[in-house]
Amino acid sequence: MGKHRLNRERNRRLLNRMLANRSFVTGSILTLLMIALALFAPLIANHDPYEMDVVNRLSKPDAGNWFGTDNLGRDVFSRVVYAAQSSMGVGLTATLITGALGLAVGLFAAYYKFLDHLLMRICDGLMAMPVILLAIFIVATLGAEIRNLIIALTIVYTPTIARIISSAAIVVKEQTYIEAVRSQGASNPRIIWRHIMPNTLSPLIVQATFIFADAIILEAALSFFGAGVPAPTPSWGNIIYDGKNVIYNAWWMTVFPGATIILCVLGLNLFGDGLRDLMDPHTVKK
Amino acid sequence: MGSHLLEIQDLRTRFRTERGTVTAVDGVSFHLDRGEVLAVVGESGCGKSVTAHSILRLYEERGEARYEGRVLFEGRNLLELSESEMRAIRGNRISMIFQDPTSSLNPVYTIGDQLMEPLRLHQKMSKKEAHDKAVELLKLTGIPSPEKRIREYPHQLSGGMRQRVMISMALACLPDVLIADEPTTALDVTVQSQILALMDELRNRTNMGILLITHDLGIVAQHCHRVVVMYLGEVVEEAEVRRLFRRPLHPYTRGLMKSLPQMHTDRSARLHVIRGSVPSLHEVPGGCRFAPRCPHADEQCANARPELADAENGHKVRCWHYDKILQAEETAHVIANET
Image: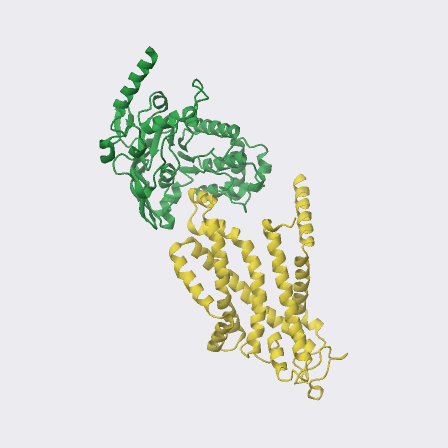
């Protein structure tokens, strides 16, 4: 069938565009690597991340302990691998909730004028506070638990998404095709969700990858302040926190998890940049 | 009374703006019958589009407009219906097509998805039924290979094709009234005549009434039965098409006609231009609204607002001096012919 050939042709061209985008390719590889780390942690780690070996405290990286051991004699490599689960899990969950919430807030604020003032002023207020301070405040109030950490990240990042969605939706709302579906008898919820929402998805997806990266950094920062993932569960942030006191005689405790955070965030940001270029037809390279 | 398909009585639409409230449509009345094409003509900003949108109450959702007067459709005042009653009318009994077909289709859905929307909204069809009906509708508007087109996205179609799709969508539920807001302004002249011919044909078949908003007097002459001329939010003249073209009464209408190039006149002469420009709705003149631009205006025009009066056999005009102006012109004609 001609239609199938056409589709195949279109898919092939999309694939070529993706492969030609270097930041997209690098970002995807790094991100997939990190996801694999989290998903297959039990297969990759060569030690139990919780097993203490008091004799082997703070030993240098060697053939047995690739990233060395920490102040309790735990294998740093295995802890970094397992930390991918909590760090990325917290980041991803927070990103998904933030995306959904920000989407709803942004769309409603864009569509209903009276809600715009209310919702966007709340967002302005939240955005006026330094992110890290606000997050520490929320976790300190609610208690250092993974659930509260996710709540804090969600509250911190929802205004950013809401703003972006709302500015995209305001443009879409004024298009003739929205007026046209209203003239066909579509109800407000139908107009918002079926007709405006899909047109705001590409900025949402791009922004979500950046939020994901930001959330991982913020989680690490909070864990470093002791307001993040509670011990003994490893997270990249709290491994660095543990290594802080011994940084002069055990550099491996801070460098390896630090480098992992950098790789993960770099990967996500490159992925997001590439995605933005691919989705926005105006940035096609000459 | 009450026998018309659509009757607008003393409609006023006000908008709140930062510089105060403006009345974009100020006391407009006209009617539309079954099988009839009524043209609403006027310059940009005269309120013809606002009138059309007000009939379907398309502004109020966002709380920016207030309506007064009555829009009677089959005896029911649309301005008093609830929002859900209104939704049952939009796209079902009264449909609308828009000026720019390039922006009136949602880029993220296929033609088919969008064609099925009014059918799913009003006729509760299953997906299969709606799909078949959509193909049929596309065929009706003369789109070649509709089964293929239905899976395509708006950007894959030309402007004329998209306007045909819009017409298919508007006609999906066989409406009684079709409001066409400058449906051909954005199209090539050849495509324009195809689209208008299509609308004529479909009107003959379904006997719907068409309200055609346009600023193109050529279209009015060829495709319409009656004309309403609007200026600055009010109706200044209303007549049957032939009567209006033979003998326009209002100085504004006369100005419009004179600004058209004619076959039999000297083509090296410059075209007539109505002096001045349409004033802003924030500074509507006190008396006759056209007075500041009218060559015949006097003190009476500046101070008192004329009523829309029946001049002869349903030819209505809003002017103090239309008979005097006509007489003067006829005398001038006679003199010109004698010399």
